[in-house]
Image (tube, rainbow, N blue to C red):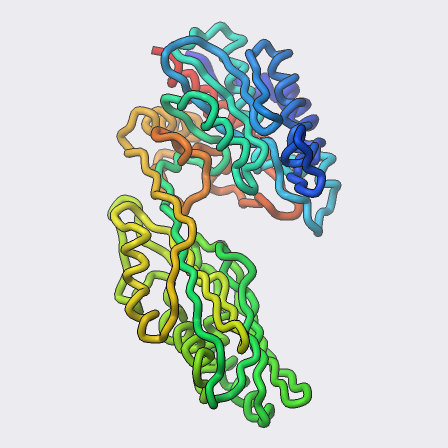
Length: 466
Ligand SMILES: [Zn+2]
């Protein structure tokens, strides 16, 4: 039997050279530079073309579909194993110690945009496939290594692929973490509209919290007309002493601005954040508001505050295999003229539907004259742990990593795995390696990448041989 770790070590030099070339291409989607030829701007397509040129030189059959997505193919058979990676990257952002598009290896880590998401893992997996091809392994099925160029936004390329190419039999995506992610919760959102106006109460001119539906709001700012700013200052000091948030009060010509700072977190794990918006509403709830403003504040303070599981709505739901339904209140805005807009984002396991989720919220919303509409939704995705695909991938991971306690995982959503009925996410972030995806100084330990290449070698080998 081949020693996959040794085989992967042998590929290290060439792998790092090819990876470096791909990482030097700043393949960020740029809608301002979009043309008919380059619908996502030129750079994602440039990375795609460079990848396909390399794969063609390596002896694969290749295809570029509209400069959006492409593949390298090997093997013959009725079945197709698809491997879904991506070549686009997030914008670099600020705070880098090195040039994000000039990869460097320091202390055994490779630094640069795409090192861990997803160029490093994707290229490790490509090298695993290339190794098996070059060493005469007989493939009993076709393997397509498919590379998207818009994973970080709308999945334009991968969606195009599944429109125009036949559906693969099974597949995995090396764009997440080890071990296997065999389940992804569904997503649903509710858009709530609260009536405008303040009645005869305090004038709540505006309330703003949250930038995106899938983030826990870090900051919340309310502007109200109130004569006694000193009183609000005193009240806020008391509130801050009892709560895990920071805050301040400013007064300007009878307008009082109250700011609360909490903690941001990803919307799929809202319990890890501190929602500044619901804290601010809870603070304001002691004052006499009326009309739409009162309904808005009451809904946030009484129902959304400290509740990411819908317990105050009596609507908590869990599935034994896929876990709990979670809710993030990501956008919480109100103005006296336009009323309130609240965005509730749900990640839900199998066993519940977006309609049923709406029915949990509806009675409370009706009481407060709040209108509820459903936003876009995605179904939960689940491949049973006893599916041979999951079993084969788990075995490859356990054999090569020695991590005997590993179990398949369910996450809040968002991998290419869901594009295929028998699709999962598989690697390449190791359980004890920090996740630096989308951050400044993104990196991946080179040893992890080589280890993941060995895992992919065994996995693909076992999936394509009898
Ligand atoms: Zn990714």
